[in-house]
Amino acid sequence: MTLACVGAALAAPWIAPQDPFNPAAFELNQAFRPPAWLDGGTARYFLGSDDQGRDLLSAILHGARISLGVGLAAVCFALVLGVSLGLAAGYRGGWFDALVMRIADVQLSFPAILIALLIDGVARIALPAGAQDAIAVPVLIVAIGLSAWVQYARTVRGSTLVEKEKEYVQAARVIGRRPLAIMLVHVLPNVMGPVLVIATIQIATAIITEATLSFLGVGLPPTRPSLGTLIRVGNDFLFSGEWWITVFPGVALVTLVLSVNLLGDWLRDALNPKLR
Image (tube, rainbow, N blue to C red; front, side):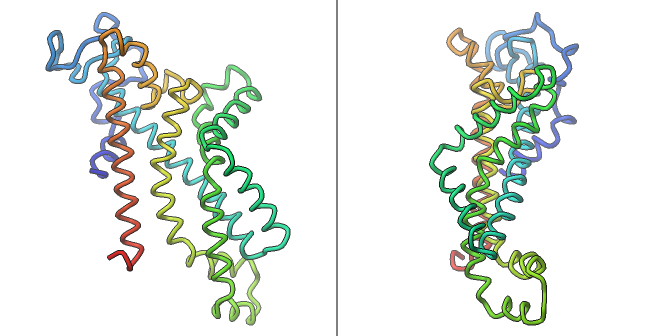
């Protein structure tokens, strides 16, 4: 299931019947076409068309590709930031450890979506109006990543506090290895197991966060439709009878998130021998 969902999203430019990013391919006289199995439907628009005459199946495939890409990039950014701060805080201790953990405690007091909204809003105010759509994806990645680094930092810090007292770390200190080398070569590989599980599960959370931001209108622009953007656009026509414009992207989002969660569960079982 995971391979099918991810494969379809990655192969969207080659398997999608239409390019949803090319306005020249839109046919306004074909707008609001129902799915192929309903009256008025056509095989050309198997899942129907939206208000611009855009093939909904193509838009969903490309939207899933964007949502998955944003989720992966945001998780990678959060992982690098959180692991770096958690590793340094746990190994060094002292005032740096206290500072990082107090920042993490404060951030945990706020919902992640609220932090992402705040960061995204500040970035939109600070950036020129003409450049907002062009850099919407990097801004969204940074906003989601900065709202999710705490879990990695706290997990890595706790594991580092345990690992740094073990004999192999003491031996590395005795032979004169530098603290940075000890952290990267000796401690880091031994604290990455739980982090990989968290990262896999966080991909699903990042996809949902991106969809929520796009649904609220502060995520990706309509010219680069993610699944959240498609749901927001279709929501305007939900009660006028064109239900497929929002229902099918919603089903695609649920399926994509479920497949990623199943991958996370499998990875957790594989990395924890006690659960076998």
